[in-house]
Length: 176
Image 1 (cartoon, one colour):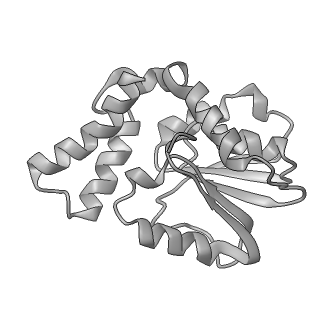
Image 2 (cartoon, rainbow, N blue to C red):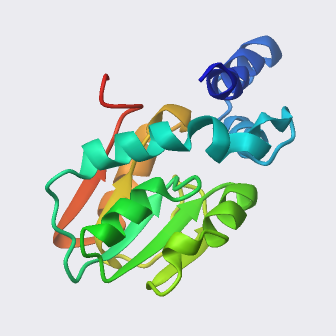
Image 3 (cartoon, helix red, strand yellow):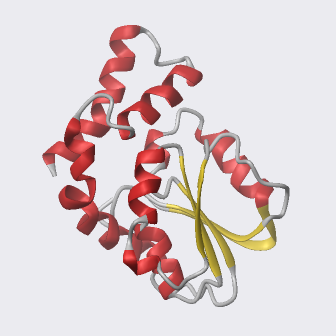
């Protein structure tokens, strides 16, 4: 939806005007602030405006993947669409990780996670707070476009995934 596109693109436009488009620390802070409701109140309606698109993309991305018995980290989880599908596909447990405490509060409040092995952790995708080989699978959907150092984030995902594990990174929707 238009408000969602405005939220995402506002950070990029802001970085061009303030010269911070090469300062990764500033870029991370802008993304965080954007999803913490500091620039627009549209984020308060995040699920209302775009959860159906998040869920559609998550189902497309994880179609046919069996997570039976796996411990999964969802990097950039937002309000939990990808985590929901991983649990439906048999994950033994899912940690939702996001830079935004606001997004995590929404995810934690969802009834769909009740009764499952589900937890949340505020984190930066470029510096994941887990030991090497901590997860069987690491997933991320519709997040990498907001990360200032995608190579570092991918390397962090590899570092915390057990040998032979799964890393699954999605784009911004099935049409992409």
